[in-house]
Image (cartoon, rainbow, N blue to C red; front, side, top):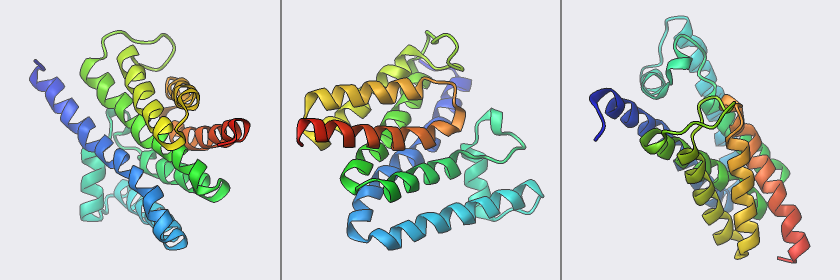
Length: 201
């Protein structure tokens, strides 16, 4: 059982990562209305950034500032919380530079792989990976399973699923902070594009 402090931390992480995992809806929305969704994502990033600048000056936009304060990590106290911005930018770059069928694998790797890495690591992580900035073996395992499953479902190829899962796990395990949100969707989407051409998928 979790003690009260760990339970509170877990609930906070669950709230934060539920927002992260919801980004898995983006590929479906892009298929329905590509450019409107792109512009909505850009608008959301700009609006959120404005809200953060105002919050740091003591002028809160009530709902956005409240959500940010609930979801922010301790390292983000009294700082601009970059996570949501890098999340949106990573998704945008993948969507704008890759065909959607490849971009969606990168976005799913970010949504599910990175999302479950934090949740599993926070709940069950006891053994830390050296020089990873606090990442755990349990979290990395959760990342691998979730991202490999997503890549396999999209590609129908077991090798691509496993190798894409390993790539996501490797990137997520690096001490990149919020900048893994930029690297994962682009790297994994590009990897799927290359390997799918090799396998003729």
